[in-house]
Length: 197
Image 1 (tube, one colour):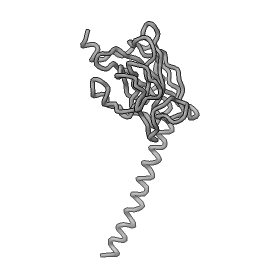
Image 2: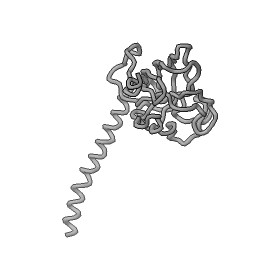
Image 3: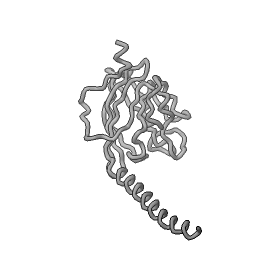
Image 4: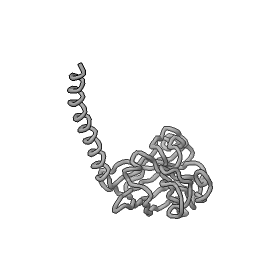
Protein backbone atom coordinates (compact mmCIF):
# COMPACT_ATOMS: atom_id res chain seq x y z
CA UNK A 1 0.00 0.00 0.00
CA UNK A 2 2.75 2.47 0.96
CA UNK A 3 4.60 1.63 -2.24
CA UNK A 4 1.49 2.36 -4.33
CA UNK A 5 0.99 5.73 -2.60
CA UNK A 6 4.66 6.56 -3.18
CA UNK A 7 4.41 5.75 -6.91
CA UNK A 8 1.18 7.72 -7.20
CA UNK A 9 2.71 10.78 -5.51
CA UNK A 10 5.88 10.56 -7.58
CA UNK A 11 3.70 10.67 -10.72
CA UNK A 12 1.36 13.45 -9.55
CA UNK A 13 3.86 15.90 -8.03
CA UNK A 14 5.87 16.56 -11.25
CA UNK A 15 2.64 17.09 -13.23
CA UNK A 16 1.30 19.55 -10.64
CA UNK A 17 4.65 21.38 -10.51
CA UNK A 18 4.67 21.62 -14.29
CA UNK A 19 1.12 23.03 -14.36
CA UNK A 20 1.93 25.67 -11.73
CA UNK A 21 5.07 26.63 -13.64
CA UNK A 22 3.08 26.97 -16.90
CA UNK A 23 0.43 29.16 -15.25
CA UNK A 24 3.11 31.43 -13.73
CA UNK A 25 4.89 31.66 -17.07
CA UNK A 26 1.64 32.55 -18.89
CA UNK A 27 0.86 35.21 -16.26
CA UNK A 28 4.32 36.82 -16.61
CA UNK A 29 4.01 36.78 -20.41
CA UNK A 30 0.59 38.49 -20.24
CA UNK A 31 1.94 41.10 -17.80
CA UNK A 32 4.95 41.86 -20.00
CA UNK A 33 2.75 42.21 -23.10
CA UNK A 34 0.22 44.56 -21.47
CA UNK A 35 1.51 47.98 -22.46
CA UNK A 36 -1.70 49.77 -23.50
CA UNK A 37 -5.01 50.23 -21.74
CA UNK A 38 -8.13 52.33 -22.19
CA UNK A 39 -10.83 53.73 -19.91
CA UNK A 40 -14.26 54.90 -21.08
CA UNK A 41 -15.41 57.27 -18.33
CA UNK A 42 -19.17 57.26 -17.65
CA UNK A 43 -21.07 59.65 -15.36
CA UNK A 44 -22.41 58.71 -11.96
CA UNK A 45 -25.93 59.68 -10.89
CA UNK A 46 -26.52 63.45 -11.02
CA UNK A 47 -23.30 64.15 -12.96
CA UNK A 48 -22.36 64.42 -16.65
CA UNK A 49 -18.67 63.48 -16.78
CA UNK A 50 -17.74 61.42 -19.85
CA UNK A 51 -14.45 60.79 -21.53
CA UNK A 52 -11.79 58.52 -22.89
CA UNK A 53 -8.39 57.95 -21.28
CA UNK A 54 -5.44 56.03 -22.68
CA UNK A 55 -2.70 54.48 -20.56
CA UNK A 56 0.58 53.42 -22.12
CA UNK A 57 3.52 51.87 -20.28
CA UNK A 58 7.10 52.29 -21.42
CA UNK A 59 10.32 51.80 -19.45
CA UNK A 60 8.58 51.69 -16.06
CA UNK A 61 6.45 54.79 -16.63
CA UNK A 62 2.71 54.85 -17.34
CA UNK A 63 1.63 57.78 -19.52
CA UNK A 64 -2.04 58.80 -19.19
CA UNK A 65 -3.61 60.91 -21.94
CA UNK A 66 -7.15 61.82 -22.94
CA UNK A 67 -9.96 64.16 -22.02
CA UNK A 68 -13.05 64.30 -19.85
CA UNK A 69 -16.04 66.52 -20.62
CA UNK A 70 -19.09 67.52 -18.58
CA UNK A 71 -17.18 68.78 -15.54
CA UNK A 72 -17.54 72.06 -13.68
CA UNK A 73 -14.66 74.47 -14.40
CA UNK A 74 -11.71 74.04 -12.04
CA UNK A 75 -9.78 71.22 -10.38
CA UNK A 76 -11.08 67.68 -9.94
CA UNK A 77 -9.53 64.83 -7.95
CA UNK A 78 -8.31 62.07 -10.26
CA UNK A 79 -7.44 58.64 -8.90
CA UNK A 80 -7.13 54.93 -9.59
CA UNK A 81 -9.52 53.05 -7.30
CA UNK A 82 -9.35 49.49 -5.98
CA UNK A 83 -12.14 47.86 -7.94
CA UNK A 84 -13.61 47.90 -11.42
CA UNK A 85 -17.09 47.50 -9.95
CA UNK A 86 -19.42 50.13 -11.44
CA UNK A 87 -22.63 48.70 -10.01
CA UNK A 88 -23.37 51.55 -7.55
CA UNK A 89 -24.97 54.61 -9.18
CA UNK A 90 -22.77 56.92 -7.06
CA UNK A 91 -19.55 55.04 -7.92
CA UNK A 92 -18.97 53.88 -4.34
CA UNK A 93 -18.61 50.24 -5.45
CA UNK A 94 -15.20 51.15 -6.95
CA UNK A 95 -13.84 51.16 -3.38
CA UNK A 96 -11.05 53.37 -2.09
CA UNK A 97 -7.86 54.51 -3.74
CA UNK A 98 -5.52 51.82 -5.09
CA UNK A 99 -2.94 51.58 -2.28
CA UNK A 100 -1.23 48.17 -2.33
CA UNK A 101 1.51 49.28 0.08
CA UNK A 102 -0.93 50.79 2.59
CA UNK A 103 0.48 54.32 2.35
CA UNK A 104 -1.54 57.36 3.38
CA UNK A 105 -3.14 59.62 0.78
CA UNK A 106 -0.86 62.34 -0.53
CA UNK A 107 0.59 64.25 -3.43
CA UNK A 108 1.86 62.16 -6.34
CA UNK A 109 5.64 62.20 -6.64
CA UNK A 110 6.11 63.62 -3.11
CA UNK A 111 6.72 61.44 -0.06
CA UNK A 112 4.32 58.65 0.78
CA UNK A 113 1.08 58.48 -1.16
CA UNK A 114 -1.28 55.91 -2.63
CA UNK A 115 -0.11 54.31 -5.87
CA UNK A 116 -3.48 55.43 -7.27
CA UNK A 117 -3.06 59.09 -6.26
CA UNK A 118 -2.88 60.99 -9.54
CA UNK A 119 -3.61 64.45 -8.09
CA UNK A 120 -6.00 66.75 -9.96
CA UNK A 121 -7.07 67.43 -13.50
CA UNK A 122 -8.29 70.90 -14.47
CA UNK A 123 -11.44 71.55 -16.47
CA UNK A 124 -11.59 74.70 -18.58
CA UNK A 125 -14.56 77.11 -18.81
CA UNK A 126 -16.31 74.61 -21.12
CA UNK A 127 -15.98 71.81 -18.56
CA UNK A 128 -13.30 69.95 -20.55
CA UNK A 129 -10.19 68.56 -18.86
CA UNK A 130 -7.28 67.47 -21.03
CA UNK A 131 -5.18 64.75 -19.40
CA UNK A 132 -1.44 64.37 -19.97
CA UNK A 133 0.42 62.96 -16.98
CA UNK A 134 2.91 60.25 -16.09
CA UNK A 135 3.22 57.94 -13.10
CA UNK A 136 5.96 55.59 -11.90
CA UNK A 137 3.87 54.39 -8.94
CA UNK A 138 2.28 51.34 -10.59
CA UNK A 139 2.67 48.92 -13.46
CA UNK A 140 -0.13 48.77 -15.98
CA UNK A 141 -0.62 45.07 -15.25
CA UNK A 142 -1.35 45.98 -11.58
CA UNK A 143 -4.31 48.20 -12.46
CA UNK A 144 -6.06 46.30 -15.28
CA UNK A 145 -9.62 45.66 -14.08
CA UNK A 146 -9.51 48.46 -11.52
CA UNK A 147 -11.10 51.88 -12.17
CA UNK A 148 -10.23 55.50 -12.74
CA UNK A 149 -12.44 57.97 -10.89
CA UNK A 150 -12.84 61.71 -11.46
CA UNK A 151 -14.31 63.58 -8.50
CA UNK A 152 -16.66 66.55 -8.39
CA UNK A 153 -14.19 68.64 -6.37
CA UNK A 154 -10.47 69.27 -5.99
CA UNK A 155 -8.16 66.87 -4.16
CA UNK A 156 -6.41 68.87 -1.42
CA UNK A 157 -3.59 66.28 -1.56
CA UNK A 158 -3.50 65.95 2.22
CA UNK A 159 -6.84 65.04 3.87
CA UNK A 160 -7.29 61.39 4.79
CA UNK A 161 -8.25 59.02 3.42
CA UNK A 162 -8.86 60.52 -0.04
CA UNK A 163 -8.15 64.24 -0.28
CA UNK A 164 -11.68 65.54 0.44
CA UNK A 165 -12.43 65.63 -3.30
CA UNK A 166 -16.18 65.22 -2.94
CA UNK A 167 -18.51 62.82 -4.75
CA UNK A 168 -17.49 60.71 -7.72
CA UNK A 169 -18.57 62.50 -10.90
CA UNK A 170 -17.48 59.80 -13.34
CA UNK A 171 -15.57 56.56 -13.54
CA UNK A 172 -14.57 53.73 -15.85
CA UNK A 173 -12.83 50.36 -15.80
CA UNK A 174 -9.23 50.13 -16.94
CA UNK A 175 -9.25 47.57 -19.75
CA UNK A 176 -6.58 46.14 -22.04
CA UNK A 177 -6.59 48.14 -25.28
CA UNK A 178 -6.86 46.34 -28.62
CA UNK A 179 -4.99 49.23 -30.20
CA UNK A 180 -4.39 52.86 -29.35
CA UNK A 181 -7.87 54.44 -29.38
CA UNK A 182 -8.37 57.89 -30.85
CA UNK A 183 -9.12 60.48 -28.17
CA UNK A 184 -11.11 62.42 -30.76
CA UNK A 185 -13.56 59.53 -31.06
CA UNK A 186 -17.18 60.11 -30.10
CA UNK A 187 -17.45 60.10 -26.33
CA UNK A 188 -19.51 57.31 -24.78
CA UNK A 189 -23.11 57.99 -23.82
CA UNK A 190 -24.14 56.49 -20.52
CA UNK A 191 -27.47 54.69 -20.31
CA UNK A 192 -27.97 56.66 -17.07
CA UNK A 193 -27.42 60.04 -18.74
CA UNK A 194 -29.47 59.08 -21.80
CA UNK A 195 -32.43 58.27 -19.57
CA UNK A 196 -32.34 61.76 -18.02
CA UNK A 197 -32.89 63.54 -21.33
